[in-house]
Length: 79
Image 1: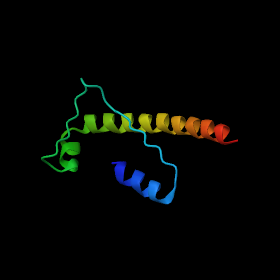
Image 2: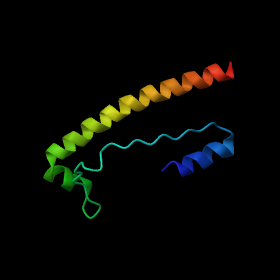
Image 3: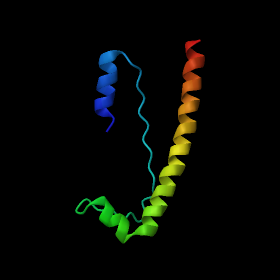
Image 4: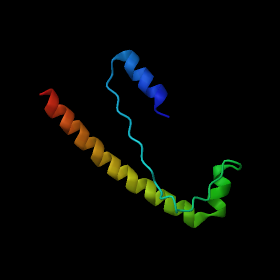
């Protein structure tokens, strides 16, 4: 979670921004369970694992673009 990172940054005067991403819709089936190891779920549900990996990669690209935009806005504001 971002709480410990935010406290670390605040204690050192480092600007901090947390972004959260939801990778699935409420209707999407996510076959992973906390009652078994992740690798067991991945082996039992390879298609869902691949789909989750694709969504994660897509979200990562979108987040990268968002961060680039936010940095640009902050740099303009600081200039």
